[in-house]
Image 1 (cartoon, rainbow, N blue to C red):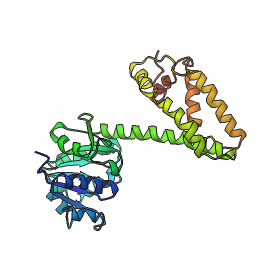
Image 2: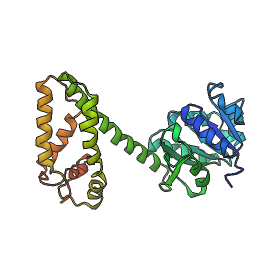
Image 3: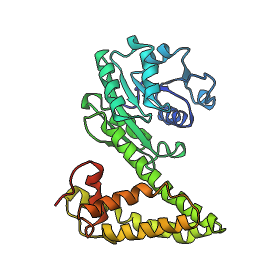
Image 4: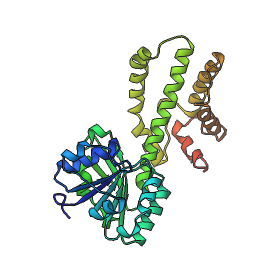
Length: 293
């Protein structure tokens, strides 16, 4: 199947779905589109998009069905309404969801004679179709439409376990939300001291975070290798600094809910006798396993 002539269906025409459809249209694909609100993304009509009158019609139009809706559960609900249209088609889900949901959907599609890939887009609608968007995906090699997926950005196949895309996507989001948690605590501290946040964020916090982010690959290698020489400081030193930080917040009547769990994890590490090791050695504690010796 060549990317030049693959008939595609795009389900979901929010900002990301519309951007996906636009890339495929500009690359010469026949593209059928469908959205629960039928008048979404009218600019696609001028690019040659075919608007299906029903979900079943949309599913039957494409050899490859690309779904971009808010979550995998919604994608599954849409597909369940027209199971007879699945046979012989490949479904690529680019909606956010749990790994278990992807595995369940893969089994359901396989039972109906279709193929399934689950994926996620690490990028913005404005960067679709450029190397600045990364598309991670996983699933059976028989369903691998890498040539078509690669039109959307930098494509990275993670393996045959269809749940791997969800694991990686949510792991990236976990890192992002952890960053937000620290930023929100910092902003609350500054505002609690009647200081603006923008200037110190730009001049102090962002340069510091960039230097810390540069250490993450080395920290990740420690976790993979099971070797934990201290980088920056050991668990006990981080415990001391974080406790001081939280005490200062409480002195100023600023809640510490966002960072309290991290202190509990450092406390557990010290209790397990790993206070002198790199802070990454607390990761096994999250997995309910003993700290490695």
